[in-house]
Length: 207
Ligand code: PRP
Ligand code: URA
Image (cartoon, rainbow, N blue to C red; front, side):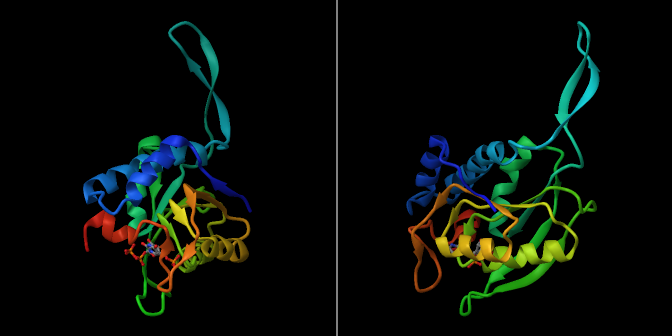
């Protein structure tokens, strides 16, 4: 379905600082949270509202509130964790699921190790991962969510390659994709170009 690229100048400015190889782990993590929060504003723009009776200090009114069950934010471990706090600032009562996948260094295939979701299959799932490279990890995570009964899924990434976007659109055409940038392509090791390097390592300082 739809590909949304969030071109807000604040998002683009912060992303450029993140891409810089001289940016520290602390700053990288902080910027990722800030961008996730800014993206969250766009991602939730069409959430349905229901009108509830409340009383202001002056009179009664019907006031709009977000309808339905709480959203569930689902990071793909590890790097997706870096986007959770920013989204949680906007939606403090959101539920959190986790999907553990890492990309095998030789084959680039996603290797599965963990899955935990809250109850309520009708919830809107915001699946987070800063990097959409070949699309293998995102497609595998979406497969698992669908197999578990979740069908209302939005994929929230920072940077994607055209190959990754194509893979998700072909395998999961009903999933909306939200990005801060669509980059040029992949290198021979399936890293995004120009990209920002290994997101997990830059968030957690593991290299
Ligand atoms: C990275 C990234 C995605 C995946 C993207 O995770 O965070 O999950 O690779 O690549 P793909 O689109 O080709 O599948 P990685 O495997 O490095 O694990 P980590 O987050 O634990 O560092
Ligand atoms: N995973 C990353 O962290 N970065 C890439 O460019 C590709 C996969």
